[in-house]
Length: 300
Image (cartoon, rainbow, N blue to C red):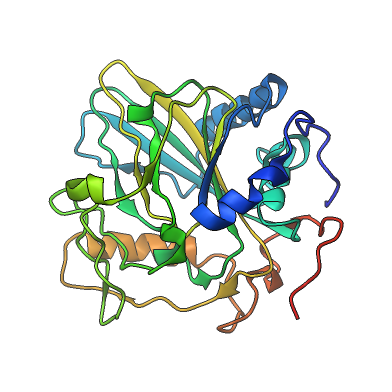
């Protein structure tokens, strides 16, 4: 289960990005996956698209454009196993976290095509997942080249906090808060005040990987008529990632009920039996995919 990958790109020292990742909460690694690895990734994308599973949903169903999201949450999934052990994805995540033991959390597929597929609202993944800590990695990469205007955007340094209230993803007001009775501050209007924020994005080629912390503010990645964007993202975590509670989802908004059902069904998977403060890796559900690297020492 913890065997090292046989597909590491030997031309890239992934650990060289670790300091930048800790400081900024985001890095873009050009050429991180070679063509052989990308063929594996693309095959997994098409397999997931053909078998989306119970957690698939169409985001923004009123749009003419199709924005499909599917979620896989098991490291034993036969679609995912080859990517964990025969591509550099887990190696990259482990290197950016300083060689820590590494667990797989979940993957997501994004398919946007047909008309104008709106940008994803600014948000932090950490607002939704019941966990806190420094050891988290989200990897975002596309099957085809993506222009900067269609790329995901990340606010540099935002992983250092604060953690904002979640977004209801309400097109009328993307900052509309998800939770009630909480001290979490409301999401700022980043899109309306872009010049005030240090936003990281770039033209990306096939094989480039955008990596960010789960507490980093991110959003964007729209598509336009005639475009088709095929994207996978992977989440990993290390030992400094601990179970935490999240506030109560509000009940006074029409979009809140659907969000509550989705969260209870999908995001709660794997956390049963954990107490606040427990390492998420203690759960039997999440599988360790890399043992600690040489020289890594646990905090005391």
